[in-house]
Image 1: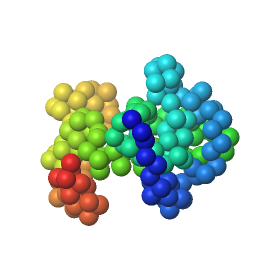
Image 2 (image 1 turned 180 degrees about the vertical axis):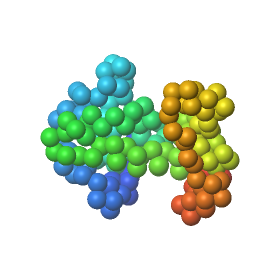
Image 3 (image 1 turned 120 degrees about the vertical axis):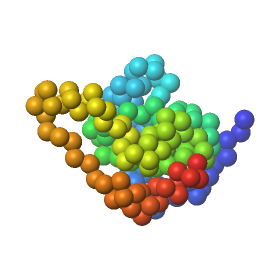
Length: 164
């Protein structure tokens, strides 16, 4: 399969003022990445950055090579990068493009639906509430459902959830 360079994709990273241009592909990000270690290099932050630099949008958002969703967002790559490249911000942008392409883990959609319906990705059960009381932890305060709905509507989250 021949991959096509998407110059618009490359340009997006300049438009959003990501620090992608500072990357010189030293590999420090991959060397310090715990996910890269666990996957024996199948997940590789350097390869994601390389694909962004080269404009290989289809490779990242359709083929998921490497799969950007495996990033744990631990920030190790950002901490170790000698050039100060904000890798996880770049990965978030790629993930957003994956969502637009309809290529995302179904668990994320389920969490989004839970937030939309209940106001929380993981609602507090009676068992959790009682356990917190026994441990002397404070009562968890949450915003009202209508306030959460307003935030979701104003940020475009509801429309995004309906479109995917």
